[in-house]
Image 1 (tube, rainbow, N blue to C red):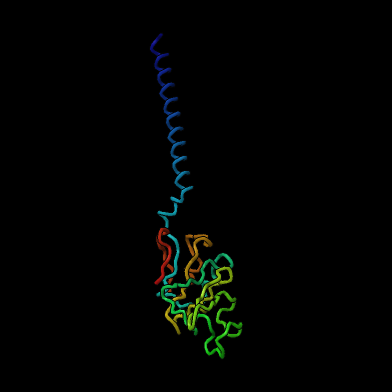
Image 2 (image 1 turned 180 degrees about the vertical axis):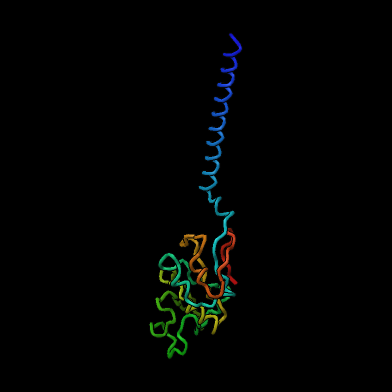
Length: 188
């Protein structure tokens, strides 16, 4: 065999091995990324939008500026702060004549807050998130005549996780901030 043929053969073999190696490397990397993504790995290094309850003024922007309807922001009840009062500032209209569950006495315009009798004088208040439009009226009432157990929070299972949140841009108090996806709630 002459020297020229051996050189061509060595070069072809080398390029073939390089192509096979690159293909295997790409296949392995693709499989690795797919397996990590399917186990939720991508959420551990990301940030998501959330509302800081200490800065939120319950202006109503969450109800009107979210890119999805109804808003991905929902009222959340921090049960550990709640007094389970008969007279709840987040449930009743200010100056309600009677403390019953009739619509004219309810502060929430959509009836998203449910009241359940526990024992005298305690009631439990829960939020029906499907009905909540994030108007913030209940949160404002709870903070002005209560202990602040109702807060607005972004529900990330509903949120599109836009890089540029429309509500954050419209928020007059700059209450929106990015937090790690591994701990997405800010309870105040």
